[in-house]
Image 1: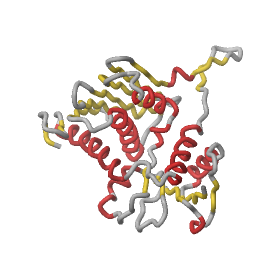
Image 2: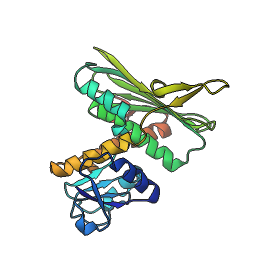
Image 3: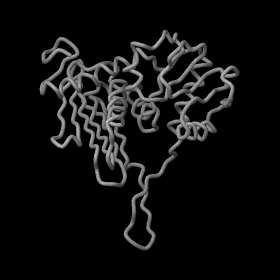
Amino acid sequence: MKIHLNVGTDLGKRCCLAGRAVEGLEWVERIEEADGVLTDQVPREDRPRPALFLGSIPELTRSAGSIPNLGPWFSVGLPRRYEPAIQGLYRSHRQGELGELGLLRAHRWLAGGINEARRQQERVALIDVVVWLFGGLPDTVYALRHQDDNGLQVHLSFPGAGMAMLDWAWSLPEGKNYDSIHLIGDRGAAYADDHRNMALLYSGDDPRALTVGNPTYGMATLLQAFVDSISAHKPMVSLAEVLQVQKVVDAVQKSLEAHEVCRLREVGGKDC
């Protein structure tokens, strides 16, 4: 499969490195020779061939009203879905090992100062995973911001008895980030966090905990899914699906501003 790269330098390097593990993938310089395109630019014109967007999701959704008709072959890349641990949770849930979901608990704690654009992207990424795992939008949203604006907590209530509790920390001291997602259903539970992939290194002083794993695996899985979607003539994630997730992200902001529950369905609270 011939793919043309139209992305920034750093992202291009990651794609090329991860692409080595994708069967049948060939990078081409001329777009005319390509079967598909990877881009991080919001499209401004019709695309005659399959395209996978890997840029800013908030920028894409803000521009949705001015985007031309992209046809059925424009897909949005959501890298967090393709992280190995998230894929494992999804498979366990879809195979019925957990039963009906009752609670999803997620932490996303980031070191150093995180600017507003990155915060928006982080909110979209995690909320997309939650909606994807639950298989639909929540009924209500309630959000609280820390007084210093360095943290955010969100409660999502889903149809039935399911709920998700999410929190982000934006300004931890310099060092490692921390991620965790726990799923609890009526038949079982599963989790994914950074601790499970740690190994102790002894080098004469106090032992250090180092993360082990393949940092390119998630991107390789995403690229493989794009190649497979072209072969199967079946798009991955459409812009319409991402706009549904954006409704939840917008509801978070409305809840913060109103200081009350924001509803997406007729179940009480402030109408979003």
